[in-house]
Image 1 (cartoon, rainbow, N blue to C red):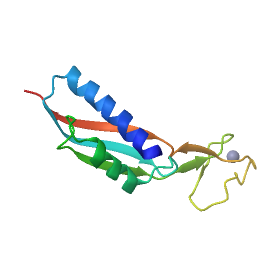
Image 2 (image 1 turned 135 degrees about the horizontal axis):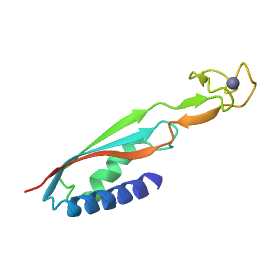
Image 3 (image 1 turned 120 degrees about the vertical axis):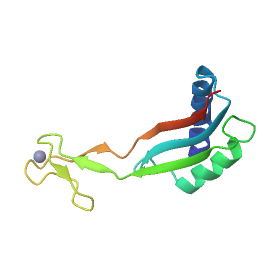
Image 4 (image 1 turned 180 degrees about the vertical axis):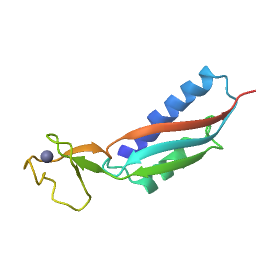
Length: 113
Ligand SMILES: [Zn+2]
């Protein structure tokens, strides 16, 4: 499942960061997930609950920030609102996704002795 591989690479990156800072525990993770990233937040947090056992993140809360998808015209840069036809009214160019497909590890709160 998609969410499982996201969580496992997330925990790997957090583990590497924590080791680099000699952290003894991680308190909170914040990830930013675009609405178009194809990630189910419920599945993600379920996967996280499973995978964090026995890691530095065992007691860490996972905060998911959802980012709406945003489209724009590649020609004139006009942004296209949600629900609008995904084509520029001026240039007739098909809109391009400018954000909303990202999965970003935004913040790690860890305890460093
Ligand atoms: Zn345009």
